[in-house]
Image 1 (spheres, rainbow, N blue to C red):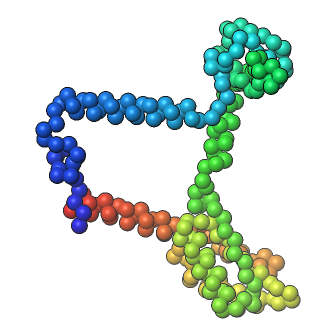
Image 2: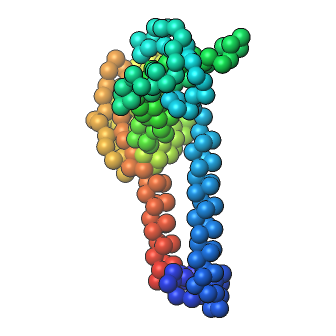
Image 3: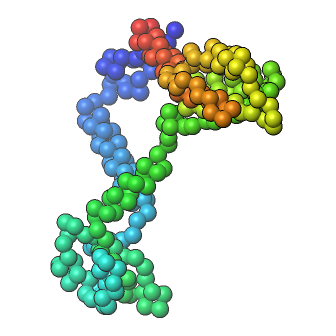
Amino acid sequence: MMQAIHPFKPHSRCFLSRSLTYSSLSCIIHAKQRTLSTSTALFVHSIPRNLRDEEINARQIRFVNAEGRMEGVRGLSEVLKSMDRDKYWLVEVSRDPDNPTIPICKLVDKKLEYEKIKAQKLKNKPRSAANVHKELVMTWNVSDHDFKRKLEQAQEFLDKGNRVKLSIRPKGRFRSEVDTEKKMKKLVMDALFDCCKEYKDPVMHQGTLTFEMLGKGLIIHKKHENEKSDETEESTG
């Protein structure tokens, strides 16, 4: 059983020795803080973005207003003084290879830029399991083996917390009978009901029987429960 190390008590595996003085400890802490500050600064500056405002290294610029119209060559300091700094950034867009000393700079609305960044983050954000839709299709004359395999697939998706749509469709001239429909409904619900957090009553439309279900996410729940039990074992060991 694992033993938890108390953060405020000396331990044999701790790198601090009893003979460590207060002054030497302070030196170590300050050195760590300097390293952390340097690392943070390097990380921030490593994020790519265009130069803006006082970062622009030029006396004159080709100025593009907020509406996208080119207004010709203007002094950088003049533009920075006249613009609304609370609302806009002056952003260096590009430099003309034939005249690199006069960059093209545009007024950018801060609010619009923030909204654009926010929308991009939401777009890149991983979807939650409940927003993942899975669709499974089989026919009324499906073999026992394929029917079992489809149910196992549906169960796996539901255990992950996904939304599942299971459809049983007619094939060719084959038409389902009432007894067959009842049998299929019972088999599907008996196999998948315990995995469902929510479900809609099966719908029959033009010969197709459709089940729609939202899984409980049992795999995710079990993972969290195991993590909690491990933490409890460490703290009580």
